[in-house]
Image (cartoon, rainbow, N blue to C red; front, side, top):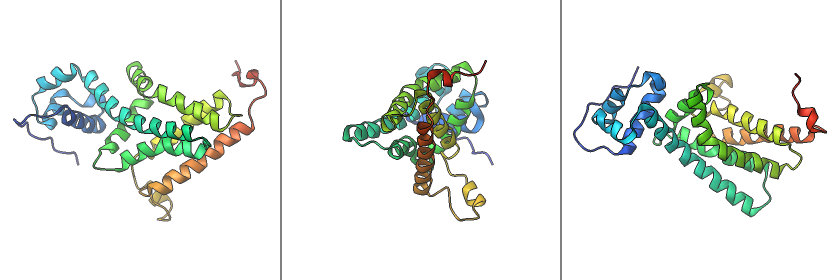
Length: 229
């Protein structure tokens, strides 16, 4: 059953409330399915205010996406910097610092991260050049920092394998950004996807084992990584 749209109200609404409304509708309807009129109605403002702040629907989506991705990435990189400064970096710690901020946001209903979980799945899988550019602008710099950190923790890990490892970790994690109950069903209640600590610890162990296997089987030469024509 779909959520009812709020009636337009006269009281002033902050940009944050507009972004909250946009996040909910974009997550529910997709970029093409959500209209500026409906977002304005849900936020309780005149549609002209959306155009004043964000100009276009693309501009609103970009601002909404950057708000959430930026907040998560700041937490990630602050934790990564702390670990690097401390020394003794481990793969498990790197993976945890990469995944935990996203999972914690997605599992907290008061922060609305479960809406963003839906959005990043659809945006990241899109072959639309605009969507790809948004992902690149939001995540590529952070991703390269993590790829570099993985190679610091595993000196025998090639750049190619560190890159694939990062992408595999992110790809598998995207499906766990918000609780769905599937782990509960598949395990007949032996575990639960609402147990974030169990999820994160297993994800770190699983990812670290794969990355160490990559490092142990590093190609002997760059030619060994060259794709077959």
